[in-house]
Length: 549
Image 1 (tube, one colour):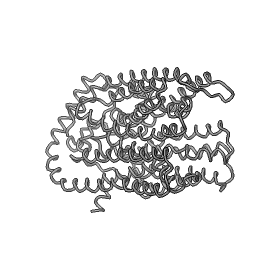
Image 2 (tube, rainbow, N blue to C red):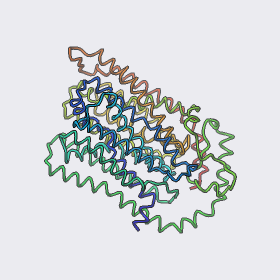
Image 3 (tube, rainbow, N blue to C red):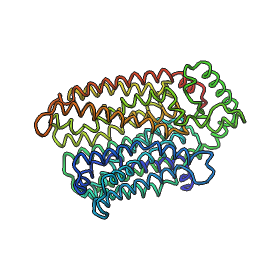
């Protein structure tokens, strides 16, 4: 039985979850001080190093290109599969963190700043490789529930930092150099052990949604558990035995999805014969549905020339059987260059300059905003620590909600994107008036929503084959928007309002005008998302109407 489970899409999903939750995202704050002190950096030099870390985080275009290459049907070398992308990520993670650790402890001679920037770039660029392999594969394995599986993968990635920090607090708290070594070894080891289990299984079963919903609930439960631990650690000084107890409980929680996978695979196996009998006859219906979809879409849709031909997810692998040599849909979808020639790509990209750019600006200035409002260090730490938890809620919740609204209500995902950007307007205005806790919760949930929606919208509009490349090209908008909003706007106005030799600013005036402007840009993003919704509304409704379930 275990052999059967180990070669199923459910075990592939669990393996992807474990790789995601060990990736250690958003942990730079733990080791930044030891990096600064041991390398003799001033704040400006440290910010330069951090910049290359941010650049690495958007290096996913390379990951997408590699994924497309090694999983392409034209790749006959035998050296292919998602494991190649995961291996590339593991190698980069190990080299980046190990060489940084070696520099900090003096194992190698202190590297020049450009070389340290390269180390930081490698370590952070590993994350898009992990994300691309696990997220795109999840979409391919569960094509009817793209939003849910993307939310699960992004959710585990979002809380990976909190998980790794909890491991560090349990065994090496206060030893920042060992934290770097742990980042070099732990994600690499877990990826190497599990990467061959991460495969594409082109199967569809009726109860996928039921088991995926259980996975979603587990992500949220683990996030809630971590939130309780974070709050307790910020209020009380937990003894070592308490850390070990909570760590053991966390391990048990993280192992729980394996039981779900075994149960799901057993259910699939028991119902396989009935499923084959039920699904074999409708080939003619599939043929008719595809023809009706194509004819209607080509003749009536106002955006037919701006959207790639796609396979209907529920019919993948059956279209060619039914139609023999007549292929109605280009299963390859659009590549990056083709996507960039469409209006829809630039609508998404510009909307994400306003959306992701503004959320990154909030993250980068969260501590400074807390200090300007006279928050205590404990309150500021709570703000920063809990961001990833609310972000995870947004990723999982909006991923599930986008599938529900699409399948049950026929509402296109861009409408939910517009709703997210509208909520961000409120969040930024709330922050502008100094209500930081409420505002940061709203923006963190919206940030998670964006990371769940953009991959699925990318897949819907441009196809699944080049999804990783196109999605990561769109997310470049985040750092672009962050640079404009955080450096050129928020930083400039803060310095203008600041007084005294220490250039400090206190009160709501420090950030009020800048976040009113940020809210105005979020309004622009909302209008762009609404435009995308109306451009693709007919397309989504036709896909839903003529798809065969």
